[in-house]
Image 1 (tube, rainbow over the protein chains, first blue to last red):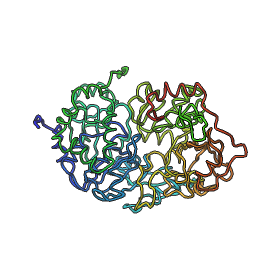
Image 2: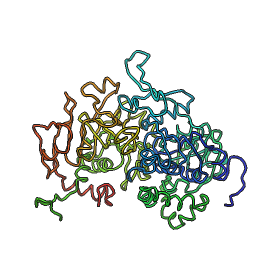
Image 3: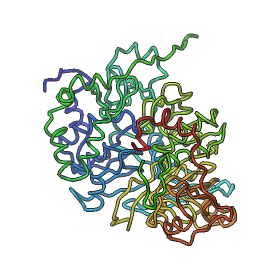
Image 4: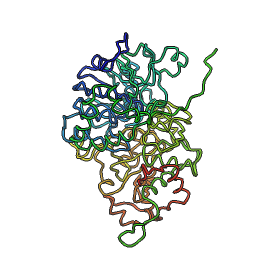
Length: 313
Length: 264
């Protein structure tokens, strides 16, 4: 696929994945059901990455695809399912039958995982929470020991907290609405766990719907969630969150998600789905062509514009 | 309309509709409600359209006081965003609103429950070699640990209402009276279980679940046969109040007109 030569952090998708995501790394996916970095996930599958430790608060198709593709060795997270569409079947096959390979999971709660990301983002070794106490999330360990510890307040209140270890990532993925050429990234709508999850990454691979001139960013700096100097690579991927929604750009492709949920119930069905939508597609541009302009047009968001604020002084 | 085996006419509503309506009735006006995907979402929307216009719906993706104009398919649905009062993230919703105790009521589901309301959404069978691997906690543990009270919504049979859950994903009252306090949980616990067969509450002394009402058309015996422990039954047990005309109409026309969660 012919992609334009660009200087600096802006690069083609295949190059960014090749450079930033080595086999065996700790990779953090993004978004609790919003702005998920699916364009990157597809490319990770196409490049047949191996032995990833995949980190996330709430996974859905992103983890199920990587597990089905045999890219994942371990998971640290809290939820893996297709939400209202049911169970994640690649995950089930991997855990229940070792197909296509065994994976291990160390599990926490959603809040627990974001606090682990927060600890990593802040450069702290652990973070306390008041949930998870008394549950098997604290007691049942998989590959981390200890996965958590209960501590009584050393300042004498008698209160108990669960201490959870920081969850650093070698690479954090973020799919944002827009950024400038430096990678100053702006996000709106729900933030999910993207704020802390992004900062947990030693490196950040940013994909965006649009690269905009810096003045657009500087006109509305409150919307920036990560400054460019924390970003290592930028890839412009319009519809890069498909089949999920990106606020102000497009809605969830419910038909696509339903089709996946139905076909992935068997391994053969999953393979035919992956051949059709991942391995048989050269890159993101071809993926969009395959979806077709008519389908994309149907998904495009109607405008609901914000008001304006006065940044003057 | 289909009739049941005994020749009794089927009621003019679905069990899922009754469950969503029961969920709505648990929210008082002005309360802060933490809402998950599915029937709880319909319950929250219905409450807001009927008896609780001032309740505030919070979603873990980071939405405060959502006013959705269609049925949200997911907690991340874009329709939750326009018209809300605040957008933030999961850490802020759980850390700043839930953990310090500002959330009155939270909804969770489960694959298995025991008599103390402990819930399993992690595995069926042995953890390391499970028969069925389920999604895991997600936010359920946080909601069940930190909301002032929780409402549990799930389907019922003997394999779901069990003596001992295979994995405690979300604590109910753990091993009974004082269990939550001993574990260090700050508050809360299950207030109510809404199944497709009946509505249950918890005894304030023993912390044990008891049957408060059976859904119309079912008997206490049928419900007992679908619980694997010796179920306590309220001396005032009665039939669940059937859906009102307005409740059904709002549910069907405003909350889930496509039947996404109610079924078609």
